[in-house]
Amino acid sequence: MGAADPSMNDFTHVISSPEEIIAAAERLRQAAMTTEIAPDTILDVFETWASALGAPDTSNIPGVAFLRLWLRRGTLEPIIHRELGPGALHGDWTEDGRARLKAYPIGVVGHWPAGNVEIQPILSAICALLGGNASLVRIPTDLVDVTRVLMQKLDQSDASHILTGRVFMGAFDHACQDLQVAMARAVDGAMIWGGEEAVLKVRALPFPHWARLAVFGPRISLAAMDADTWCDKQERASWCRRIARDVWQFDQQACSSPQVLFLEKKAGDSPEGFLQDLGNAFEAENRLHPRQTIQAALTSAICQVRASWLLDHAANKALFSLSPDWTLLLGAGSEAPKPTQGRTLTVLEVDDLFDPISKLDANVQTLGLGVKSTEKEERLASAAARRGVNRIVKIGRMHVFTSPWDGLDLVRPMVRIIRHVPSTE
Figure 1 (tube, rainbow, N blue to C red):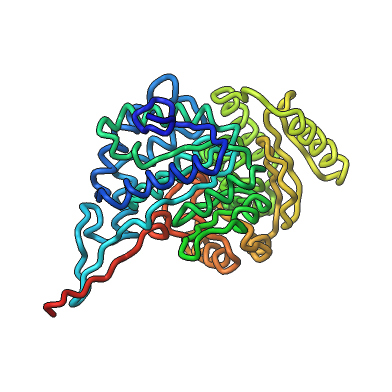
Figure 2 (cartoon, rainbow, N blue to C red):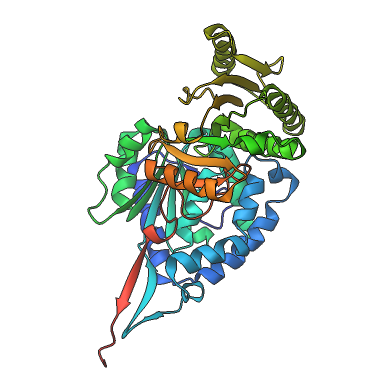
């Protein structure tokens, strides 16, 4: 057997020629087109995989705790039902008047994940597998080792190779244009993630004219709290812990990571007490999940933003660790500054939460909210949605990956909904 044999333990392959990609895609296409697999069967494997990922060698990988929840049947069954219809779970047809409907795979889905989230190659591949497709994944260079470990757990969980035979993980430099072109020409659809430059380059590749593209480009996310919420001293510590969890997960590099928190002013209440509580929550989160490494450029950026923030305006305040582990910048205004990341949260006071929300655009992916009044939250959510925000959730749940994401379904774009009207009608 060659290096692409799905029975091998090493599921990451260093690609050096277009021919390797073409051959892998053809094997995957044969697997997807010759053997039908119902989502229910896939979910059985995913359940076992989720349990295997709890092992010591994988449980501490950033994002794996979330991945284990995502793979559970209780998470994915409702998505299958909503996106593909009530009969899809068992591969059944759904009656539609005199016709019947059923989801079929498009074939081979190519995946171009971003390199800033360790589990993203796996998450992207899963979305296509749920539709019965095969997944051809280009692994970002920095994620090869972690992807190999996660795929080995799938191998242990998939004794019959129901899914491993439909996945090929290939590693090659993003600058290898001949390999990028070969991969694009070999697939029937693509899921593209990442920054603006990377997304534009992949979209410009020569995909077949029938190929379907689902693009998840660069976005930022924000949070907002009304005065009644952050001024409630009994509940404030709990809200601060939720904010800290959202900032820490994925080290604030994900599109769903909050970069700015808008606080609605309240006469007679200073935000400094809230800032201290939030600092305590950040320090506690840092003890639980300390940073293992940090790039020199990020350290420099954090030090620079701390200094410039305090020098820019006399009223600005800051709270941060002695090291570059975490930073809180307190000021006022409804304009979100350029994100620093690195667990750096800018907290801005505003007179009215509708002011910053009126300035949002489609570049904002997620808005995390903490609002006491249901009626007020509904108006804020509607205002944000009209401005282009695709996800409005409770603070503490900003990274809950579910369908739809960025306003798109996750499974349906990569399936064909077949309509059959019997000839006996």
